Length: 275
Image (cartoon, rainbow, N blue to C red; front, side):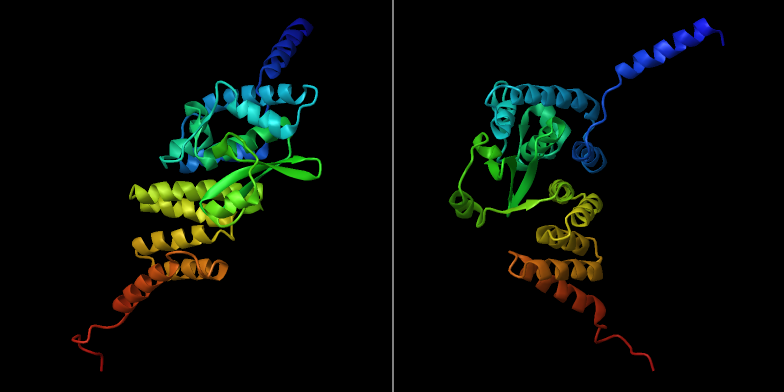
């Protein structure tokens, strides 16, 4: 190859690399992966530039004099055009990151994981918090973790508000456990749709990512029971009970399972016995 042609090739490669999108950070990448593998969300390519634009907005706000991380994040989510909360419709489009971005609407999990993704993109320290039936975000500001309640336009609410509604302010979770929460919501949607094999796969992902999530173990057990895998269902229920002995509905499910197992494994009294 001549020197001139080599220079042209090098220039073309260099130019192409300048326009290659930067890789997304780990949690954001995994949220998109979960959406595509478990949730049938097919808009990841449009999600990437939207995430990049929102991340840039957040960084711009953070650079302003007097800005705080939580306030900048809340403004990015809720200043016009704002993301809206969804509290009635459990459809997965309000849970999974790509479709939350497309609809500009999300559940507590949908908006919460979006907030975590934007924080990750902008280098803001943030974490998810799980309470029974609820998910919100906390942002580090010095030695203080500032609550960001996504269903209240990012307000910082006291312990008593969470105790009155969920029984507890909840506990912080790791990024891997956040993925388990998303998978759990996918499992709930698939079970409601009667897509039990997919529900089982989603719940299995949930308990793998979030091993101490009692509700996910119990839901996996219920799905396995409906699929006829009774021994596996019993093991999942046992794990749920070990984690949360008073989990609502668990005793009833276990009683039904015990009756089904007894019926399946006890020989028919009228059947001939082997000599």
